[in-house]
Length: 107
Length: 120
Image (cartoon, rainbow over all chains, first blue to last red; front, side, top):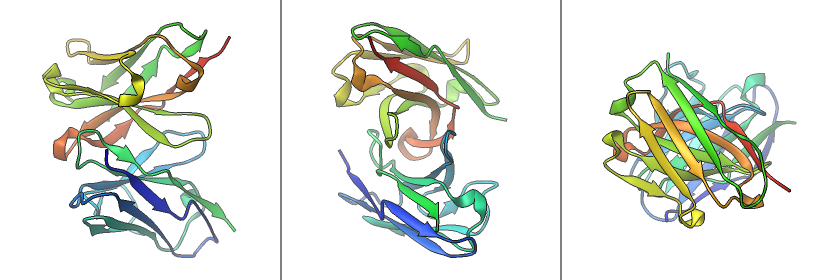
């Protein structure tokens, strides 16, 4: 199975800040990488797919980059609704896997 | 609007069984692969099982050890998960999700989840 490792596990930031979350794959996955946002008590929601393509309706302050084994999610100008947990997901393999999550908390 | 609504969760004793259902609407169900993902309390997301369109392929996480069975009814636009020999480690919120994109493995829509609690 392809292992996905996110860093950091927890990130503290303030409204208006910019933050970056990293996701590393145990082997190359091309650009088959998605980012999901999960607010407390809610279902996850797809934000970005194919490493850098924004899902419809997702604000442009979210962006993704990377290919191969290293990927990043950047959020510019944090809004109160952005404080949530973020998961990367690889779909290079039918046995898709998630990173362990990055919890973004208010400083 | 794509909607996925899970049901069937609840409290079950160790060794018991439960069948989860997922009713869908807003898209052509038969054309898409579907998947179950679970989340234990306070933990991350774990893929459980996937079924392709027309049930051409079915895959399970190795951790299930053959206890779960995924199925679909395209006439009813519904997805199911039969869970047997449940243990405390199966306690989780179970999400039904649509899978699309490359390899039909990109989760693009999620249900709201149904809680399964395994306890005596």
